[in-house]
Image (cartoon, rainbow over all chains, first blue to last red; front, side, top):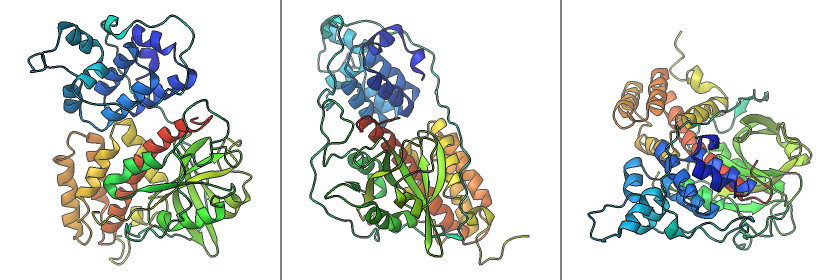
Amino acid sequence: MNVDLLSDEAQAQLERWSKKSRALFAELLEDAGSDLQRELLQRAVAAGHTPKEVHAFADELRGMDDDDVFGACTLNENAPQDYTVAQLLRAEADPLYAFELNGHQLDPGEEDEPPPPGPTPPAPEERVHTVALDPISSGLSRKKKEPAAFDAESSDGRGRKMDWQDLGRSPAPPAPPRPVSGSAPAVAPAGAKYIEDLATEATRALGVTWREYELDLPGTLTLEDALAQAAGPVGRGIPVPVAIGPAPGASRRFVLLLQLSTSGKSRAWQLYDPFSSELAWAHEGDLLARVELPFAAKIHRRLTRIAIPTSRSASF
Amino acid sequence: MAPPKSQASAPFASRELNGEVLVEELVDLRNAQIQARHLTDCVLALRDLEGTRVSEAASRLKQLASNRFSGQPALASLLVRWSAKLKTEHDVPLLVGHLERLALASALVAAVRRGSDRLPKGGR
């Protein structure tokens, strides 16, 4: 669903959000599992929920099928909870409210931005209104870039079965604190983690968990060590998330190390950037030079973070 | 001419099987609203496919496509297409590995997108 196709109520609320929050909402719509989920997300926005609440709501819905989503976001007026008419009316317009009334809990965390100046939104009890249904469109368009060629002889990983028992040992620096909420600095707070929990949640069913490390800062992994750690998993077919950016500690986006190819003593890594849809090979020496990556956005000069798989599940 | 029985057939011998081909499939499945959990379910259902004969593996893939994933036509179509490409016994584990990587990559792309939004000045 393109944000341009949202209801007037949702658009009006979105205009009160920061640019970053609006971009996040567009991503949430893109990643939603169905049109029903997209519709419910825009209704949650129209009902005046904060970006964090909508984000947490989207995360909860994403893993559910449509029947479960519908059940979780709809009040049964014959249910023993004996809802009031006001609750039933509000729940019709506000699926997040219904979701919580049905006993589900959201953990939106702290707000990361102050509310923008403007009129105070009405109290929740006053926000009973109907949201017009809008046409749905996937809004997905991807540009495909021809990948750069790498004239290697063979791929280490090709043809090898993934062996979850053989992920190798991970380095174990001291456990860092969780990411810090608040105004966004240009450089990540020391020890912050951004993808470890997301990747672990995403691949838990496949028996893979992750540990995230910053690169090339005092007390962290060097890029050389990181690539050595990643070579085993990538060679066995486990893509490895890495962050890229202009300088150590200045991560701007995550991409994936998708494949590893060895030719004699030289190695090359295939990187995939899902934001730009770029897929490119880079010689390891070029990565270690830390001056340029094989992507169009040349501001991202080096790898700045890495998540290395750690778990070994026998269930797969 | 069919490849020798000791070799993987061409689609499975390509270096880009788990690169360019995988990314194209990833984008197609995403555009078709196929979720990572569908791919995970698919991989888990195929985990014992290795070691089976080509004909049996192809039959299992088609069966999975027409039954369990009939509601996800893009994924069902992918399985049917790959089943038709199985030619030698070496192809079967390569296809299983490919589908495993596809499932992992699909799950990780979602994590990468969300994680990038968390980065200071990150996301795009």
